[in-house]
Image (cartoon, rainbow, N blue to C red; front, side):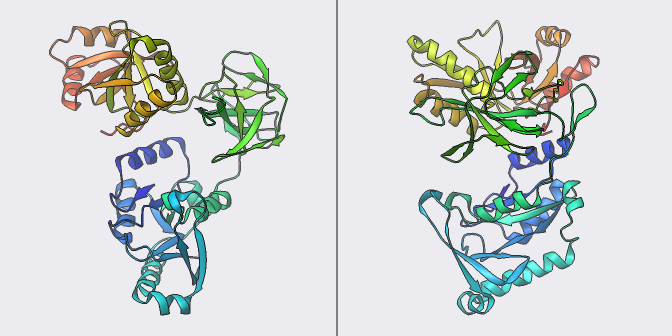
Length: 420
C-alpha cells in the first residue's frame, strides 16, 4: 500500500521486501486519494523505480489527489464510478455509475485527463498477465480512500479474482503437503478482545490442505497435543458467523484456543509442520514500565498478550527484569497502539522510555559475550521472548560496522526487511 500524501512509505518498502522473500504476489492500493499529494503517474514511476516491480493499473482515479471525483476501471472505460462518503467508513460508500458521456459532461477535464493517463499507462506497460502477477513481476494497482470506504470493494473483489488458488505448501523439514491431503492449517494471527463484552481471544487459521470441519480434533505440531475445534467462526469486520466446513484458502477463527501461537501448524493424520512466519526487523525500541506497580499482574498479562498477537516484539534480559521489558517495533505507531491497549484493555497504563538503538541483528552466546565486552560500542543483547532468539542491538550502522570489523567471525545475521 502507498499513500497519495506521502508516496512510498518506509513500511511499504519493508512489506515489499517480505513479499519478495516469501514469493507472495503483490496487489498495490494507493490510499488517501481524497487528500492532497503526489500525482498518480509519479507514484507509479516511484513504485517501479524503488520497488523493482511493474505497476499495472486496474483502477484509475478521476481527479487529482485531494480532489477525488470518482474511479474508472481499466476493463470498462465507458463508465465512471462516483462515490458518496459515509461517516468514518462505517459501511460501503454509496456508488453511482455514470456513462462516459455523463462523466465528460459533469467532470470535464478531470474525466478526459483520467482516460488519457490510463491509456498512457496501459499502452506503455506490459499489461496484466496472471503468470507475471504470481511471479511477482507485475503488481495490479488500485486507487481509493480506505477510511471512507471508497474503492475498497473493487480491491476486495480483485483479491478474490486474482489471488492464486491454493497449492502445495512447503514443509519445514522438506517436502510439501498437497491441498488434497488431510487437513492442515497455519495460525497467522492472534487477536484478543475483539468483542470487549466477552474478552475473547481468536486464533485465525488459514486452511492449507484438506477439509476443516467444526468440532474435529486437530493436533498442534509444536506440542503434539490435540484439541477440539468446537468454537469456529468466520470473521469479517465486526460480523461473525459460525463456520461448519472450510476448504484450502479459507480462514477460520478459533475462539479461545489459548494454547495457539502465531506460526503454529495444526493438522490431522500424517504430521505436517510449516516453516515459521518471518518477523520484521525492528528499528524502534522502548522500555515499558507500569505506571501503577499494583497493576503488575495486568501489566505482565497485557505485554504477554500483545507479544502473542505480534503487535510488538518483546525483548527481555536478566539485567532489566520482567518489570522492564523492551518493546521492539517496526514503526513508532506501534507504540501508540500498545499504550492505548494496555490502558483500555488490560487496565495497566504504561510508560515507554525510548532507547537509542536503531538496528537489530540475530546473534548467539558468543556474540552476546563479545558485545558485552566491547565498551566503546553502543550495543546490547536481549532475548526475544517469543522464540528465545538473541538479538544484538546497535545505535546505528557505524556502531554495527565497527563491531563487525573487530569481530569478523561473530554471528550478526540480518532480519527480514532490514532497512539498510
